[in-house]
Length: 266
Ligand code: ATR
Figure (tube, rainbow, N blue to C red):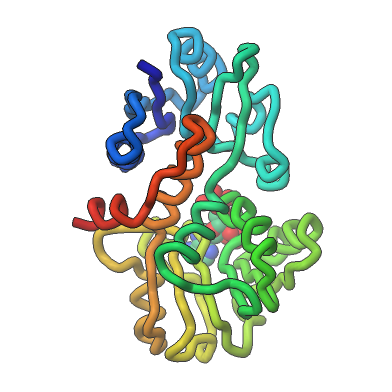
């Protein structure tokens, strides 16, 4: 039976084993999927060993997406632009292929689950780290009217805009006007914080999305509600969407995400 795993550090709270097991049940694919915690410093040797042990592929999560990028023999164009790999697969000739599915996971959540169109929308993204870089190409492919990207550190967001000239970079203080969609991609959410945003960015119709997920609404979602936003979502659908794309790469069948999202929420 083909074996897969999510590798990261820590891994105990990962939902990926449950998600992929539900996908396998849904599609009738026969596979095993588990979580494996790797020591921070030995990514390369450990992953080689796991492939030698017969694993067919891996999802890669924090903090190894950059290590996986350096590790692969071949990768997709989107992984090159994202400078990150979250999906590893052994090819028939033994070489290792890498891809990144986070961005497409976000798009799938917007288009298939939330029904939030992206085309012609004025979009604001908060943050300029690896998580944000990974979603820029797929977002731009959907032809938004504008894509403003705000970050605490101006230099970092300007560097990002050098690689993605369609972006308008700025700091949080420089933000003004209202947006159709605001996506929080900062890691502030992890510590329950919200970036220091000026008032007036949000109206009732502004859709606010946190790339992080948790059982309770995130601090960013609570902020958005306070500002009057009526449509808020966390990143659980993105997580399931990126998993579905990885599953498709490995197995050649695309699972439905909506029932899995419902199961996880329950
Ligand atoms: P990730 O892989 O999650 O994107 P990262 O590459 O370390 O992690 O990037 C973290 C992002 O969250 C950065 O944009 C960071 O802002 P800086 O570039 O100024 O460091 C942002 N961030 C982290 N904590 C934040 C906070 N408390 N308020 C605002 N932005 C924050």
